Image (tube, rainbow, N blue to C red):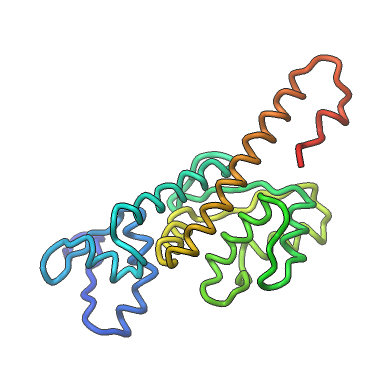
Length: 209
């Protein structure tokens, strides 16, 4: 071990366990770590230490469905070491997110789904944390950008989702599925309009709402 760049941690104290939980959870999602419990590599024990809410096949099915919905919403496949995806929002969509009050349900599918992702990263605060995504939206408002691509680290989102209780997971998944369906229909509409000869350009640039 000493002659490699492999890091080795022993979790033997509650404070250390709490400190390492986010890294453990994301490492499990990325399959970039090997964790061994007191009785060997027990998946249930490892998931408990990572703070994942459930450990059965239904839980893993929800986690896989969440990942698939994220990829359906993304502009392309994950990129880089952190497996970053981006989700593009029109100006009216990111303005809806910026104007949302705490606990308010957003009207449209895509802003609602992205707000759920921001809240996932916000932990237990009930509000998005200041950081890359929030700063990007605030900057876009000031510059009046017609659209923005909001970046998210896929493993981090998946880990935070797995740590949520089942009712919250189901609500998030439902919103993501609606948003993915909306995006699919909107993309198909725009492609059809772009391929139609003689169509007015203003019509081509008008997405479904």
